[in-house]
Length: 460
Image 1 (cartoon, rainbow, N blue to C red):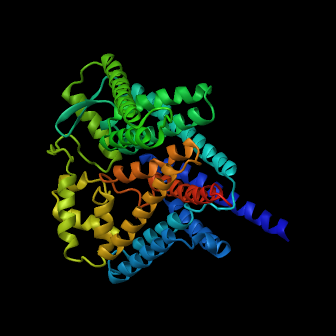
Image 2 (spheres, rainbow, N blue to C red; image 1 turned 45 degrees about the vertical axis):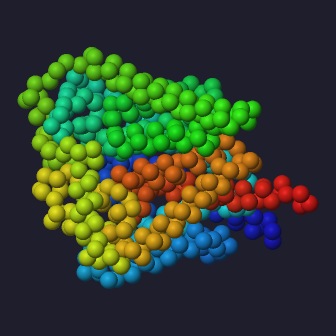
Image 3 (cartoon, rainbow, N blue to C red; image 1 turned 90 degrees about the vertical axis):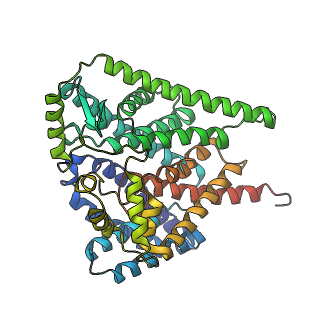
């Protein structure tokens, strides 16, 4: 009987792992503008499958979900269901689909059985990292090839200024610059993880690191840059350690390493960007307009050449102001995520609305607050606090391998990055999938911290 149960458990873990892997690759594919419409049906099928799998997991492993993290997850889902019912005249079917994504992301992607060994989980992490690195490498090579084939020497006029690089180009629908920058820096982080812990001599990983940095340099995505720099700071402050050094000397060394790494990354990026631009010629106004016209077709005829946005937040402050005003009209249960688009359409000019990108309020915390009201945002905030406490537990543990602390750093990094985006909740995209997958592993390793620390106690 025990062998049957064990075999069933192994199959369940394999099923969950394969689903995570497929979702990670699938959401990278739907980040390609040209493929979004072709793959749209798959999003609904994905939601249906993950909901079924979530129910199966809860039914077969109830003990796993008896934690405060899953309690506040469940309360948030119930809260959002009430929000949908109160606003059922507005996008009811769409909101039900969004709730389905929320449930499946919370309860399926975060699943990692506590019965599994650290060796098994580390193999999973390694496989996922390799999958992400491989897909991102293929994407980046294709993007660079198309860029130099179609747009050699072309400057793009974006928000009143001329730019070289991928920032103003959709590459005929193959590339999304903002999402591309995010994929680039995450691929670099995963590559360093693989080099540091598993495959130090893999030439492919070194090549990928170069290619991702090259694309990243051409994109110059502000949100991606903030996330990468925050990761560097947090890594040296909380993960890197040298026990032989005293407290003051260790802090001084950490600050020096942070400054050095930031200098190296920014200098390398600037150098690669300058080297790329140096072989380019200046473009005439007519050529720039032709490129913009071509790209505009891909992004819904959004004209990027006449933007008047000049503030540091690149227009986000206006979105936040509009969102806060609307929040006070329905402060308790919110208006639902899908209705945010209507609020922005009324509050913004036609140009600014067309260029808002349908990304909520471009701040996950304000987006959740307006979508689900005070009740929902309280549950969401509680979940964030619980997750950060788990990350802190992993940081403080003396029994956790360094690669666990390295990957756990992604959680606070993405939470900081979403101060300027709305990706990790109430939406189904590449970052939300990665965020909740990594959340599941953080919850697993936090339990391992408790187990290992207990084993270290005298008398046990």
